[in-house]
Amino acid sequence: MGQQINLRLPDKLFNTAVDYSESHGYSSIQEFIKEVLREKLFEKEDITREELDLVKMLVKASEEKGLYGTEKDLFDRL
Image (cartoon, rainbow, N blue to C red; front, side):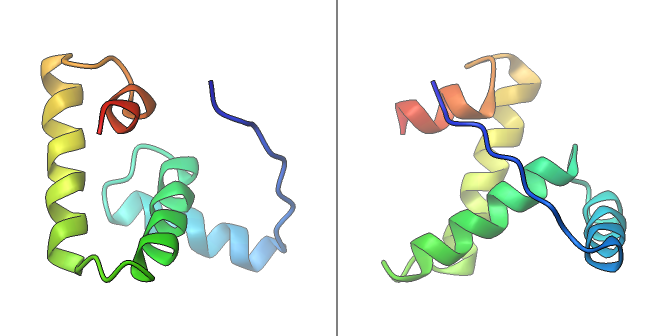
């Protein structure tokens, strides 16, 4: 099971992140923040933007078809 954190953001940063996540199809600001963290962490391993996009498509397709239940389940299996 994953760890939960609390994060306090300035109002302007929070509102901008919410607007961005909604306009770019994220299911929640939490999903957007998780993807940003993954991009920053995986960047060190030279994973390309295209590879990250493929993972995102895999997650979406798997969720739509109910293959793993949650995004965490899917990433645990990867």
